[in-house]
Length: 576
Image 1 (cartoon, helix red, strand yellow):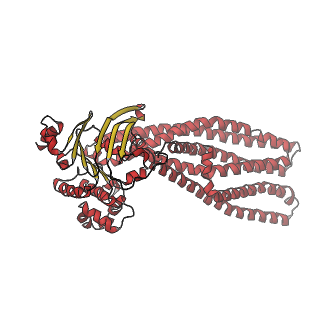
Image 2 (cartoon, rainbow, N blue to C red; image 1 turned 45 degrees about the vertical axis):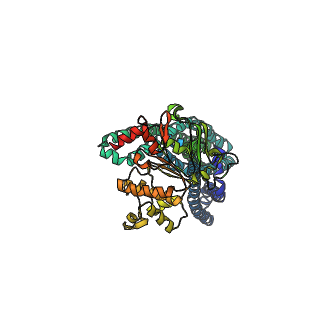
Image 3 (cartoon, rainbow, N blue to C red; image 1 turned 30 degrees about the horizontal axis):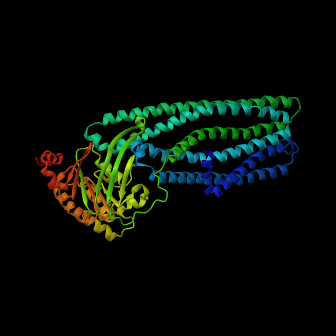
């Protein structure tokens, strides 16, 4: 873990070493002051040497001016190093999430992921800046103080430094409790973030069902646990901090008592006694830095551990020597496919959705999947672009096992329009352009026209530059659905997956979109999932799927012939 943390310094090593060099100069400047004070007290003031008093006072002033600029560099550029490292870690984690299997997102709350991306890495950046700098300055000050004090009186110096092992022992003893407490606190703030994200996303539902008190109670529970865990963490910090302050007070007492006795016995003079007192003030600076360092270490390393935990999640894997899928004819074959959703929250239990499924979707044909909920229709659609990995069997496109294809080329040839439309917080144009990021404005407008939404867009004050709001909140369900359909028109893939693609549309608009989708479907392989059977009457083949697998298949007319068939019953029920 330490090696991984250090690796993030490499791209910024010039700024980092500049920061440490300036910190070194600051420490050396601090070491000058007590020695100069000793000379002034012992020599220049008793001897009334005004010239040397002014010279050394001027030297101190110049030292303080240099420190002014050095402190600016350390404070500003030191934080810049931390911020850049934080940005690098956030970039790496975000890119890793782009390759993380869908199963992880099924089982992990969005707020938890957001907390690790934002809160945890902020603490890491603070640690990245302060830890090396504080540790470096502390070591320089301790070693420098020891050398200079030893040159004055070794015995008194050893007495003072004998307190250090006690301080180190206490700090190490307390670190384990602080680490555990801060980890629990960090985990709980993730839960609070998750609760907030869920509550805000679903605020229309909670208001519609007058469930505000219920949401308040859920939030209060998580917020209350955060207070408990955070209080426990601060309790450990309080013990640590107060203990360290106690030891520094004892250190002052040791200096006053021991130094006083040495002065009375003539082993040191008044100037050396004053120098000892001043050096102890400098000596306490690294002690206080160590206190701050340990506190930051708990916060920062806890966040970094959680960062590494997410980075350790196995990403989607490509097969060795995976090949590109280029302009496929797009015959899709399911060969004895079995798939189960496994849940980490249920101790790894499995929920088998598809069992030994075999079927062929001919190239350029439209196949509709119908049947009761829970039969695995949407799951089949998710398996074709490899959003999930099957446990047994094979799925092939043009005879090629999809696990042997690169995911990018596979998904590039598949267009998906689902019932749950997601729009990004941006403009209508940006959302349509997701079908082809490099598309020209003319192509975007053409796609919108094909999706029957161009006229609506042009009626808006800002047209295609109109913001859709978070998750498309400013658009109606039908409008969002048509934007998502426009994406697919723009992408122009060889395989279309329409999972309840027109479910949010009124009858008139549905007919218009259905006609557009039929035009788009020409010459392409299309998989349609629909509960409204009127939308699949023209499919080349209709496959009826239940939890027992495929129980019927054929054209609309062929399936209606079977009076006892499920399709006939479903169709008759919908007509009624």
